[in-house]
Image (cartoon, rainbow, N blue to C red; front, side, top):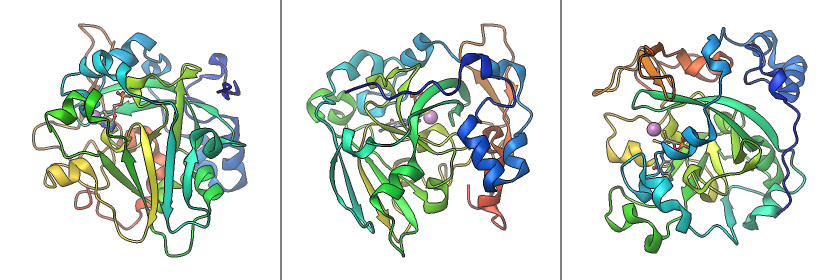
Length: 299
Ligand SMILES: Nc1nc2c(c(=O)[nH]1)N[C@H]1C(S)=C(S)[C@@H](COP(=O)(O)O)O[C@H]1N2
Ligand SMILES: [Mo]
């Protein structure tokens, strides 16, 4: 497949203000998202340094391949990603089994440099390439009555040691409220560092929702469903008292086993101190999605 990545954000553009706002989003901001979207949060200087490709591809969570951070890099190579199709169903005008290229056809692939904050208390900065999920949803036509989007990961038991051992209930599933799914920060990533997505990172297509804990960003997606009711989400199903449906990064709501106030930046060096975790992982412009909600209750 032809590489669709368009270099509309160069490394020289990666200033604190433009860390996650590329030109298109800035235009969208001017058009309606308001001044808050333009200004963005104060971003710590160390955020300017994306993690290396080696760090991003060797320290992963992908439980289908095992519990350990090294398991995905060790085993994911055997995952079959060609051909790949994504079933789109539920409350959509144009349901079907879309070949990946057809799903992405005509959509703009952008670079988005996002922080990724895992609920376990570590973080990275990853230069993704991908399309806005909103554009994909517009393409398939969201019908009235749809309120949530549900996602499902491929299951390939013969090459997935974690599936063989049943470390979680598979397929891994996740969900977003429709307005979260349509937010311009939410992307379906198809690559990183300008190359196609490494398998351990969720090839060939995975969700990235940068203001939520990493487990919401479901990998290797084979199904997208527009639904009326809040869909199941794997970690929430596994342990609802520890993992909520929303799972917005929130330094004031601790996980029973991990303080969420600070985080360790992977690659920060042996002696680097933990840095403060920011509300919504620093992506303040999503705050309006949760107006009037108690985020300690809806964690
Ligand atoms: N299908 C699937 N998606 C998944 C996971 C998983 O185990 N299975 N782990 C999640 C978790 S906990 C995190 S932190 C991120 C890690 O993404 P990365 O390995 O690309 O950094 O993927 C998320 N997506
Ligand atoms: Mo995670």
